[in-house]
Length: 280
Length: 115
Image (cartoon, rainbow over the protein chains, first blue to last red):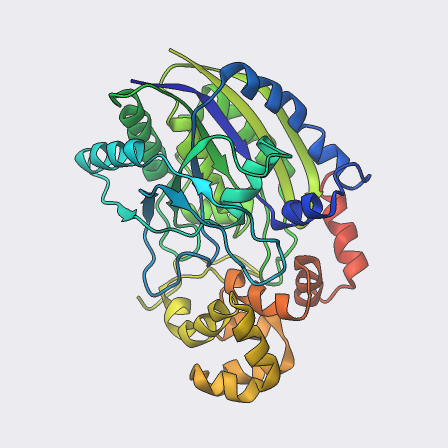
């Protein structure tokens, strides 16, 4: 079976990718954000994952409104990054883990989640930026990957409860895998932010900090919000917290917090980072 | 679907109503993933909008570079960001325009949310 070593949840703001491209990590604006990742890398060096299951939302690179899956799972040997239109450098391809992907797909569909499966899939900044943060300086990402996309773009979105159940099913699927794998689950996006409308710039520190507290030991309590409540409390793009819920719910053992960081603002966003360890 | 799923002040939730209204506009903005298409838009903006079948409100909003008008015309911010990218605008520039603030004041508002 796969060993789920834990989950990492982090913001995936495109400006982070630009800062990495410019080498701006030590500038005063960026340092409070980047310096928090040292402890995460130490933890990764201890738990030595083979594969990262990356739960994120696509921002119009792979999926357009012609076909918008609620949950999509990558099933390819390789995933490519590409031009998103606003100047981030295109990154080298990512190695897939097709054997694990197909096991997850079989198990999730058996568990009543009707997925879109993708044998070709472009991965955008929401997938790539977190991997750059976790394995910096590596030209090619050293772990294999399984992209999992949640629709946070076009409403109706899957509810927090549905996302939590999806994460639990993902955890069961990893537990029942026949091969040997050490897996880290990464949930990307958030925390509170809103890019659009007269309410642009909305940030809710109290709500974010409450979520970061509860997600460790009482994550079910966060699954009870409705999507409209989440939009109101976290902003139109703060709904990316759904990806965090999926990642947390996939941890099937005893969960403890290894590290966290919260910093406002990065770009228009309250940035959040957590490392949650999972012990069988 | 006839009425919005969510009603929050200063917020247009991108639901089925908006997705239907904004399809042509968003499809055009989605095309800006390609550098070739961005160059084609810059060469002849009106022809490019016509090719994607934008309605008059959408064409005006594109001409005006006005994000609130683009959202009212069905635009989704993730696709609109690719349009803004053509002009090198950041999400702070876009936020400042929508809130009627200077970019400096908008950045100060973001920083203040951390205190």
